[in-house]
Length: 596
Image (cartoon, rainbow, N blue to C red; front, side):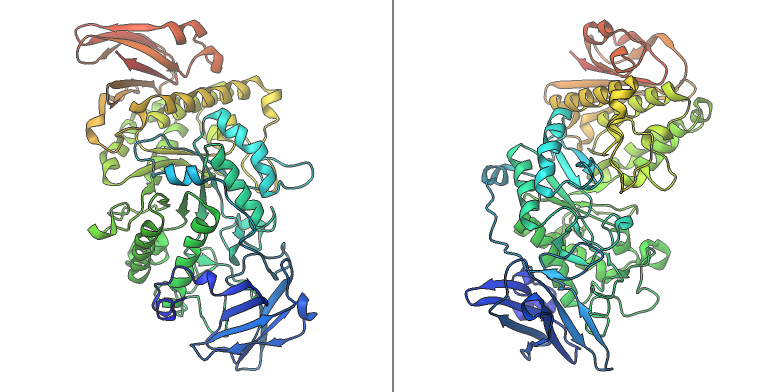
């Protein structure tokens, strides 16, 4: 490791220097604690007695070679402070940790697993002109394995066939770096380099990613570069000072009560850059979804508090460096602000992300579908608004875990109306989402019409598929919709090109009808929606020229729980003559056509 790069914030491989590493003569431990009085090592190999570490004199770097230390053994650093107090700390760069509530680090052999996904790694790209339909999961609550969690290497056997059957292209894991509190879902971490022991170890996680790649499924990781847990065995007050956290009381903690990283410090920047590189390099993740980027743009995520310049500069350097190291990995921002150029290259004064979650689209759309049809008439433009700003960034449409918790209701239950009306509207919503420009993300359970809010301690209600036919039909609709999306290039190619999208109907607020076309190459798709509670017979649609409309999908089909017979879904052809045609539009429905 280049020490000058580490101290200046430009080191990307600090995890290969710090932490516990196997050598020919034993295990070498190395930790950074510049303001400590002294540092000792305790662990199973010493019967938890102190082994004094040597201060190299190079800015507070302590190291020790332990000849009898072995893979799988636990250890901690014991930090002696100048005020006479002592704190036992987990290894900031440790590759493994004990299962909560215990907190020791564990020696791991990072060379033990061999990937077999070379072809995938060589051929993957950022999917700009490819379908990208992401299935977001919480590893421990997708499904249970009897009375326990699935281990990393086990879940793939169950999850991957489901992803393939349902037509998803990628799976996104909510944070799996070690964290102490289940209720935090992994967003307040203590072991930034350690896969959580809830589901296994390093080799198991690598096996899961490798298995996904061999099956043609990309894997994204939720990465948390903004804040960390306050637990005393973690990064907080690490050497008796605020080594990792902000030094000012008014910004020391985030709105979640966790400590905020001091991104302007070189050692912290190198820690986080190395961490991001670690997950991409050592585990072959295909991209990082970076959490709470709003807090790195503005202090506390509040525009009124001003731009957080040091964090912004860090983000730019992080993304630029990751693009150089991993040109085909995707960097995705969760950002709720209107800050410009989030997905512009750093060289053009952007933040350098490849995609940004469109939280504005999410909010406006879900609020619209909560309303009664009468209320929607005065909010007709809300559905149109997203396309006014869509081409400012490279957007990803997400209906994530945040939208199905804390009393917000699930996506299905948010829909206006009674039981069958909710299903009809959710089908129309998902058809609208899938035909709207932008990559897609759905949280687990959305595709089965989950009524119960997500809870991290309970698996999704897949048993509803066996008990309630409406859920089974809804799942079939989501599957068919995913496959339609993947098999029609007009729905994903050129979606960030203004010339590939055009409104056909965008001015019928009293009728609540919308229509638009998507185009790519020689293919054109027409999407028509009726978001009202009224049936429209022989409704006129005007589209230039003479065409035949071949129906691809109707959300009101009886095979999905609607009222339109199956035959009409597959056999319906509508002729456009002199720029005009007529069609039936069911209440709360969407229809999709190829324009021939």
